[in-house]
Length: 543
Ligand code: NAP
Image (cartoon, rainbow, N blue to C red; front, side, top):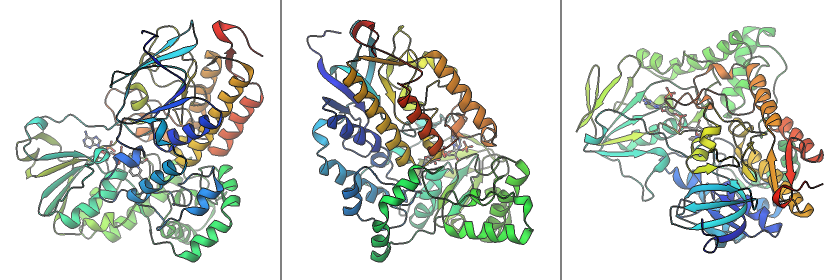
């Protein structure tokens, strides 16, 4: 790269979603000249892209928001228990304006390559807009679920109707009234969009490979009294959440499901079902995510609810998950999902019995039938946790790419750093609690830790930080070990990369939770960044 033409920054952040925006705010406060690269037209990350009908958060609004500024949380008022995508995007927009963030963001710009230059302890970057950038620190704030997974189906190119992915929904919206719509996929995105698409479409055919467990969201508007009461104790609440397991407040039971009578089990499960929370059901007893027999009792409770709601017994059975323990694939929250299958214009194709043979010019041919479609919606998820990190070619200290380094699965230290890739930080990267928690809490924790670390490097005059191989190996072993105590690795989930053909099967998130992880990270920093090599320019040891 020609250094003469490169633009020079202290830090480059990739992504202008929740993590990238907060990272920018923190780095600016340190006095670092920072640039954010963002592929989209504006801020918002996942909430900018995922505009499908019904898109909303399944963490409560009060919790799914920044905690770093007490005034911000007092000034903003959420209108619903679970905020819609437009409301969350309006919030992000408000934050970007309030802190004047856009002036340091380059929109419609995608990072294409990043190459470490040991002789100067800096990264050289190129973008798809032909920018050459030179930076000391590179922070990947690309989100865990941002690279769309589009399965290759025979004949897809021949389809004459419209094809959409929930994660790349058109901004002008889509009028499906009168259309024959097909949806492939029944994870959170499918489960949220299917009820709304069904209300408008002439017909809706749901192509289901694996049924998911979903619980009713019990969403409702928030009234002024509730908002004011919450705001009055917001600070205390934030503090408690920081030290919680999942980044939300729960009251996990310490009792085994086998320690109580059946009537008591039912009572607790029923209360959890009615609570409309993601974590309530699985916290009802201590052993649901550890003991397969205990888990099966919770799973059967949900299957019984499906059988009550769905009128046609064969459809109810097809919608009932039986191939993985409940909770090992991410739970969903829905509004009217199961009842949607009682509508006369909705039908379910169980792909395990009746697989797709090919897409035709007019629809989908399965082994048993031909279904005519005007619109085909892929609700098929993402190349999770590593997809967006591996999309650019990131070449580290020894000329090795991150793709090569992670060929057998991601290897990180604390989810934030990778040996061989100095001064590269991966916010909520694999090996951190991330997707198993309220993302906002995990984002703020990782951003704060990274900003503090960079601040410390600046203070001491260090120019390079890199995780050691030993620390990384130890962390990867630990992440696997704690996952192994639970049922999580037994579900064929995107947590394991199992949704992407050929992706290594490695359980990627750190299961021990927000509080334990925070304590470990704080201890690493307090111990002089234990497990990292830190040096000054040209490899001079610092401190
Ligand atoms: P997902 O959970 O990965 O679900 C994808 C669905 O597509 C699954 O049912 C999957 O079946 C199916 N699928 C994938 N490839 C297929 C193929 N070739 N043929 C047929 N079916 C196929 O993706 P998602 O629904 O977009 O959700 C991803 C994650 O994003 C969620 O788990 C959640 O963490 C987050 N999210 C959150 C919200 C929210 O806050 N409310 C909303 C949306 C998404 P298999 O199960 O058999 O692989």
